[in-house]
Image 1 (tube, rainbow, N blue to C red):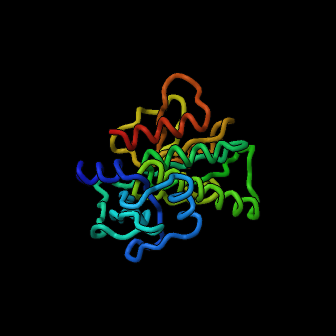
Image 2 (image 1 turned 90 degrees about the vertical axis):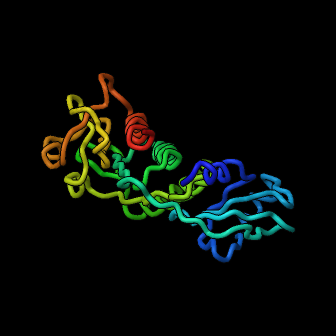
Length: 224
């Protein structure tokens, strides 16, 4: 994306995630948020995105959005950044997916590790995934992003750790080659999980909470 295109997204009155940006139609919730909460006025520029790299400029007119330019496509220039994280307690999953979305992580995988305290049964997992999806959509709009991360899981850590370098004290420093990193539970990885992992990376000398570690990794993978 060019600096001028990024400026268009940044300077718009609002940014909206829609299923279809060819035929721009607002659902009731989006319309209420734009015109009642944000109080977008006629003539103001609003950008829309499909969350898959597509976006376009629109103009507000009489309570609807009228396209004001062609559909643009943002092309990925690096291998996707993937972060896996053991499901933490309370509302911390929401905080994690919000921040990782803002930072532009491409895939977020939720894990049930051997030493996980929190485990979601299928019913709870469906409920949490719906809630996390809403948080991610709101974060994408707030950050003016055009790529909505994929949300995977929860899955058993042992099934996927061969694809990830795990964060572990004493691991090697993260480098530009690292594109997939997994954060374990507060109790740490089991020996079996460490053996299954593709590699081990260190996150410094201090002990980090799960959400702090996830944010540190995301910053390293995306802000460079």
